Length: 306
Image 1 (spheres, rainbow, N blue to C red):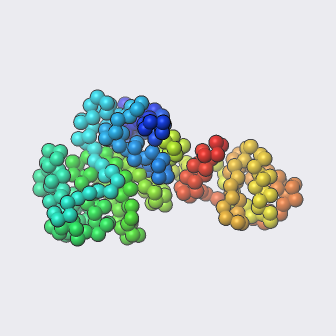
Image 2: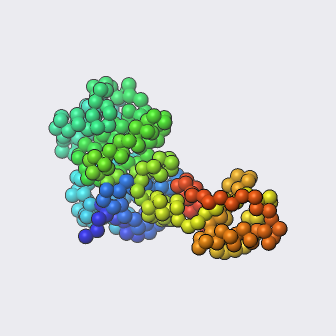
Image 3: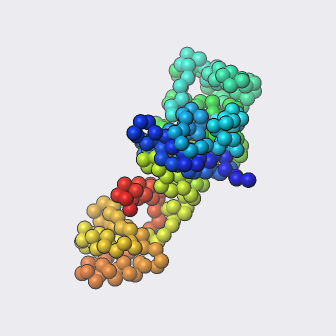
């Protein structure tokens, strides 16, 4: 039996001639903190909405917690929590009142569960204050609380750190870790903050133009291959020389450095190639990509048709 809590199989959504999601197949495994990454307009929110049954796919299928969402969505949704885009609340009601009313829409929740959830997200002390007095960070945490109310097995959080200050980002990061480590939840996290994703996530999917560019471990993505940072006297010419070799992948970062992916122990070959063309190599340093660098590289390669 698959250990995936969410699987999509060639999931596709078209709006007229525009393809928002293009034959997307991915799998979120049980106990993952799974990062779902892409630029604005990449198709992340549309994918999440199809996964939750909020948008009907043009083609393909979704299995959520073992259930085919085209046939038995309610069984899966009863065990799933979600915060999709910016949460909205009744401004004049308290945090506790908002959660109680939202819970009532799906069958209700006992007061004890509401209180436990407010405690979990750090809002117990402000539970009886009107939401209009809440900071942006408190509203985001209330949105996460709403997603946790049904005591789910799987939680989807769409940009939970959007607009937060560094303290709020750190608190949200710690909360997401607690959801997995203490409550044993599986978390799917959509975020623009790649540094945070790199610290939190076990596996990531990167999409662009609705297409999957990468799915797998963060460590495998950022540590895969052998990357070196070069400092040369004529970087523009060096980049052209390296581009002529199809076995190498070279990119420029700023005015000084070139980054080369040279697998198979070919670092010495890179140096020899440049020296043979009369270029002076003053620095060769092993380099491990950050998630942000790997993301930028993959999107750039996809758009260039590499």
